[in-house]
Image (cartoon, rainbow, N blue to C red; front, side, top):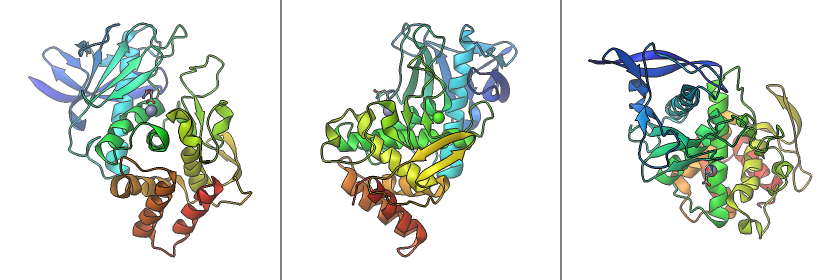
Length: 331
Ligand code: ASN
Ligand code: ZN
Ligand code: CA
């Protein structure tokens, strides 16, 4: 027989987590029947196919260390669950494509692979183990980032090059961040940093900073007419910065113990409206007004339309959207 169950995982980045599992025969497997049947597989160094579904005798998964191959599975399975729940409870969305269909996750991809990626053709998520430092790419924000590429593909379809590519990347950073805040996990509390847990540079710094994107040494803080020439992970900077300004406002601020200091291109002061409203505005713009070719100027228009729909044309939220865009030089 098979039955929906709740297991316990000791993850690497998020502490002890509950996992949606399935009782099957005399044991359990990592299939989350409460969330569309999302399943997590072990590629065991392979790079194709689905590998092997994770199974376990006692429904207790991983030990918090990367040396136990169930640990990355616990993180990935939890990240998929939090992303599902965030979409459902905050966005009113039934799964990545909005049709209730679950994705699946694959961990232990390749050898010392330092990346994670969403693949629309398999509707699946894949995580590498990282190189040498026992930091698989399975943190909450990375999971939410990658799966949100599927959301963008299913909605606006922002083309993954030039300015639309930067907006595609920024959308994933925004929703990955929103997932991290949503999970409210004491081992990985919400922040406006991307990849702060996976130490991909080996020096303890995050991959990206939303309050001041140029802190990564490559991202743009502000829009300019040449921003679309940058790699999409750097042309995302101005939109990430817009999202931070709209959420938290300009200047110095500490959130969950992390200090930020967000500048504006024109020296103006932006008063934030809170992350929850910023998320709603971006989501409505993405799903209603953006298209595959939307660039920065059109994103401003799309979010102002979304703010009008949600809060009214004369609202403080509408004004904050306008001021935040002007703060990154999109006028
Ligand atoms: N991890 C990368 C990303 O989501 C994979 C890629 O190059 N698209 O941005
Ligand atoms: Zn991405
Ligand atoms: Ca983060």
